[in-house]
Image 1 (spheres, one colour):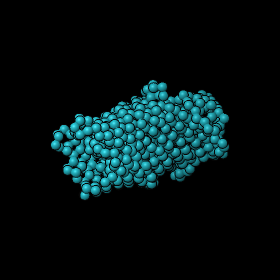
Image 2: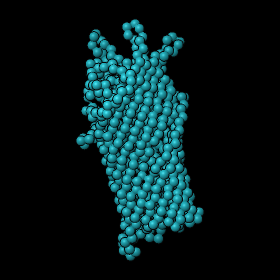
Image 3: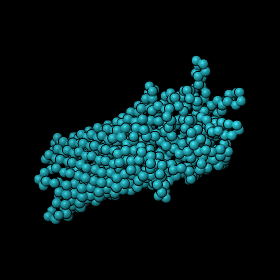
Image 4: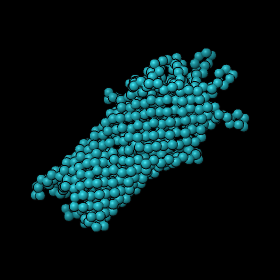
Length: 532
């Protein structure tokens, strides 16, 4: 099936549900596990360390009991700007990129119902909040000289599938549950080539040969977010015990368009010569919904002391995710035919038996780990508020399942072996200069979720062709904020500086050196609100 896509025709609107190997990887699952420091500007300005202090709408997603602190109604909206900066370094090849995005962070309200002053139950409060739990908006660019090629992985997957040339060349190859889509693309573009031993197929060789150099570049455009809709009820008992529960509903929308290019070079004596190259264009999209329950409490253990102790537990979030993938591969390579090198140029793509563009569609389920939260809050008069918070989730207990509920054994084992427990520490402070004006400071530290030797595993019969992955390291948030409180109207502003490192790999190969990436993100958040 050496078909070449020489022009763009009318694209058939097709999506195929295949019977091939599960699509979700631990990197797709990990995208859903953590949260950004996001919410009201007051919450961000204090580094999110408000689990025991309460009195902020965002706390219904961390410690639901925080809504029980309210004694009046509240409605607010938050928005901001984000500047994402990245700097990559691959063996001395440095690339830098930055991009500014707008953000709509959250909107919500609290209705406070007073029961009485003398009854044990003083208030019953109800709340709703929309919050962008995670933003995926990001542009990336990196590259350098590689001592390995993605064509090695193409050939390895094809060899592991133990398939024939006829299976790859068949018109329905993309519907064959034994054939890797990446292998078909590589074969159709002369990047994966069969070799024979005494007339029998011995396997497939990659276009790249060990010892040659590859100039590689990678770029991606990621968009979307994980959106959370919280429905909360909280209780105030004796003005000393606060209990709360939140039902969280999630909506995921994530899209990545990536391009990976290789230019081949070989050494002819003392001279390096070009041998062509290719560009693999990948499209990946995931959408889905999830639900969880959060339970929390805040206690003032000493009646006349402002010390508050908070605790919360979050059940696993149960996600149902639909994933879509497709790819196009443009190539221009020199191929040895007989004793002559012949230039082969064209384009191939994931397609059906009629040559129409083909997009895979798979449905999977992800069950996230339990999450535990402990916090302390302390106030000095009405002028100072101090908070500290610790959160823990064991990411290695993440479970991946098929749509029918059966566990994905390999992928769940990957999560157990390559993910680890994640701790988040938050500290924050608020100081009122005058009753109407406050300044805030905060800090977060989030430990790494991935083990150092984690990698992206694609089964030999996978329809996935996006081979890139990143192992994120620990992250830090530094925050500062100011706020104004009038009789009913309030205005808050916060600045957040986020930084973390990652190790990027365009594909899986023991010969591929990592690309070190430093991310620095600056964000300004504004909240407008009204108490009633």
